[in-house]
Picture 1: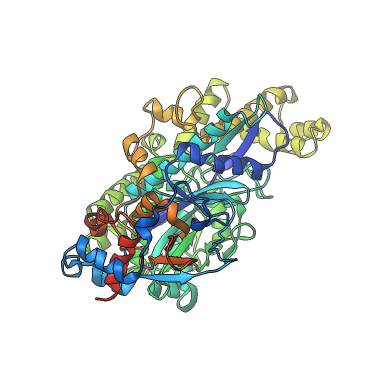
Picture 2 (picture 1 turned 90 degrees about the vertical axis):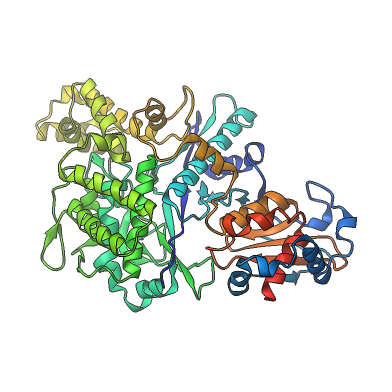
Length: 598
């Protein structure tokens, strides 16, 4: 069964409080999350007990409106609103099969209460904003379109940035301190935090990957994900986690992966994550959790990261890939690809053959062209393929100039090279000094051993101070690249480049602003977001696949639960006409209850 590959991106943001040596990252993250109410639209707090009937609601209920609420009257109300809806609206049969409404009662001293995870908001744009391991984390709503995913991801950046700005304006922090947010993957202290992609899969492909035919992971999927770094790596100065020295890498994450498969994400990180949380009807759908990618600022990098992976998963689902590309050592290959700035070093395959990362991407690109030809690829799939082909061709021809406007690692590398040239220095010189400087830092600025190392390496110790300054400026520029402030004199380095017209784009500012307030139209996110927007004062619980509402009625404590087990229904196309009739939760539930009776 072919399943549309809905996608969402969840990003853990780096955070610091400037102007103080020691701070509580959790407290700072909580302040950022709490400030959403001052900058955002409707949202559902998911971190406390709260009750519609206690009065802890923004507005009072109109008791008259709900005095005689029950399912029978709601159905009659729907009949008045929409003439014979089940004959006119084709989504009824889908709703009968894939979704349902139900009523539940929970009592606590005569009051109904619902408890959800601390520090979490479900937003009216269909996304989720929360705290994870003391980091602000933003997870976009699911969408089928890579272009929409880019806009949704950028909307998340702006929301988080505006929340941080609100904290800094509020006067909560002492004078001279401010919260700064970075969209990167490492704090340079040995800690990495993720940017995870989530892809909707059919149950058959997921079960094959995890349980029945796991060789698919090693033969086809991991070689793709590892070689994908040359396209969507974010670039990084330095190395961490006791890995071999590197002055510049293509990806920020390679140093932190240590095993092949596993469920964990914060230690012994696996290249293939086996998390099995469907957030949907698990008998039909599953969710693939991809954790080895970088957090991207470039719209082109995000667009390709998501788009080419969707195509790859379609090919896997169709059994279209037959060539065994199993890497001899996938973990080591990940690090090698990250450190190979020539793009020429071959990776060893178990078959004895050798291929570079660019050659692997060229293989998948050619196969994708045949697949899309044979399977009537959509216009957007072909747009993704065209841009993918342009990038692979540039890498094959050592033509990095166009990539320095498109891909994060190339944009960043170009900036750093311009800085080095201004200092009459080179990558080679900085790379020779890097182990000396890092050793001195590790030894608490003990210069004795550092001087001996420098002389042994044939370096002039008199150059140490200058080379140290150059090295730290490379790292500073690396960090400044990821500052998500996008406007004015305080804009981060990436956004200064974009605002000056030096970076290619996929979406417009108006696309991004729209996604700050409205959900994607092509999945259940549309209906979920609209319910949050219109009925937030009645909602006592929400997650990706359900919403619970509580309304005053003759049965205290009754909670109505609406489930969305199919991520592909509840779209704007299906629901927009009827949605305009839903002025109360009663009318909305009546519709879904009626749909279950067809």
